[in-house]
Length: 234
Ligand SMILES: Cc1cc2nc3c(=O)[nH]c(=O)nc-3n(C[C@H](O)[C@H](O)[C@H](O)COP(=O)(O)O)c2cc1C
Image (tube, rainbow, N blue to C red; front, side):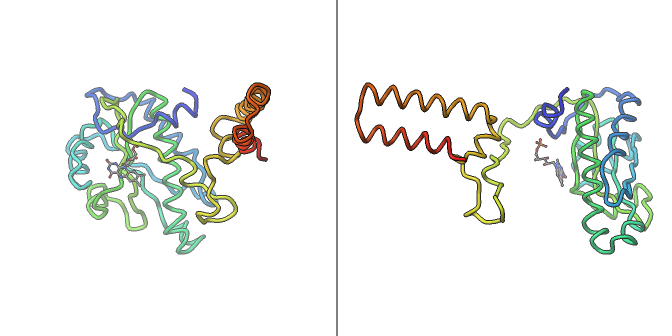
């Protein structure tokens, strides 16, 4: 599976087939997590693999009764060890880098699971103290993500939308006046590529000259010229 395809088709799987997951696949998923970038290369993620059905159910209850979690044949709980990162980077290390490091590892793992034909989910709504108790997590570590993994019996939610880049992207500063507009050249380039934009500009140019020849009506020519200008703005 190509990377962009894996990214674009990844979704949260919350229904699993009662089929065991091969160990070599679990190994590949863990290995993908291990290769994530981390602040100062501390690699402070820790992975707890849970297969025991009783413990899976207890984790599901700790996850605010999200019972579907227990149906995944494997759960990996991604934790962070905090002493080294706090020693190096203080409060920011503990409160920011630590979460960033583990999240990057989880994204690697979810994409790898997906590419291997498996489904997974990123679950963070849980009673932290209860998860610490269930897994015997020591005082210098925190659990951040419960990741159920298995063969999917689920479908992506057809009503789920991803907002357009124009809704979330600014140029040179964070303000609505600097937001990328949908008629902007950059926006056209990242959506359709420069070649597509150039083809549209050429086509608009040809259309304009044809219309000028046949119609010759001033206001319409101005209108077409405006469109052409909007597309060819650098
Ligand atoms: C930080 C974080 C916490 C999440 N916690 C939960 C959770 O507790 N339970 C759950 O079912 N999904 C959880 N999700 C999954 C999101 O609901 C899901 O990614 C989002 O709705 C987009 O849907 P999709 O993954 O199917 O594209 C969480 C995702 C993130 C990034």
